[in-house]
Image (cartoon, rainbow, N blue to C red):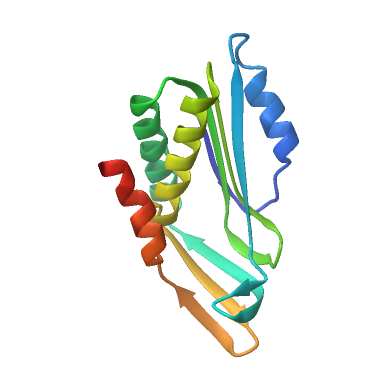
Length: 150
């Protein structure tokens, strides 16, 4: 398991390559790259600032990955989440999951993202033409997370 919270951008191709090389029996690698939207709730977004508590955030991300590892037969996971001020269209998060089969890897990747959106201790503030606003988790994010509890 690799979990990193960082200000600098990441190279998704490099990270996937690193994950793939960890084991020879990997049959599937699934990845998700999240971007800073340039439009949210009908407003143009120029920047997104993410704040977090160092140490606590990494532990929360590790706990989410551990849950995924206990649910599905997956080999390796990489989660990289950026913090600080990001411009619209910049990369914000990478989740990459390796496993023997695609089904398990897809489910684990989606689970991790659903939990990151609602359980990870990040605080997000958007800058729009109308000013700055703090973002809350959306009802759709909560619903996506809850489906894993059924």
